[in-house]
Image (cartoon, rainbow, N blue to C red):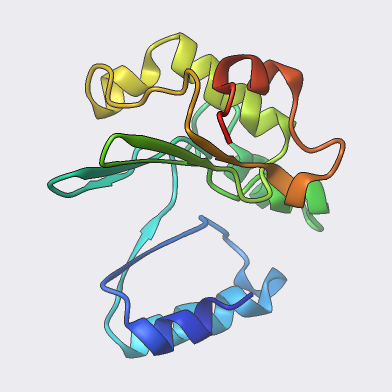
Length: 167
């Protein structure tokens, strides 16, 4: 909701946005894309094939699955004439950040199906193939930002059994 304000205040070199075929479903997304285009900002699709890193930090997008892949929330969303709020929420990326030895997991508004995708991909070593062996370590992260602002039905036991956040 505040992405436009942030882009104006800080400038953005690369923006990672959802792969939504009908931008008119999200007025904020349409406005954001227009503002980013005016600033010649590179736009990439957020999906679990993306990562960014520096000298002492690493960011990996753990979800959603890219369009055309099994369990892609993009395919589910884009196939609907009027997507549900659950389908919209599942476009929220789950993002892993490791910085100076601390591990963070940000879930946005991703639902239980995306949590399951992330844990299944982690347990089957998909992230090792995508990002490098042991680059993503979800076992006992230091900080977890829970989905849906901590709603009682937001974070599954299946997810928490692996992530086991310290904070």
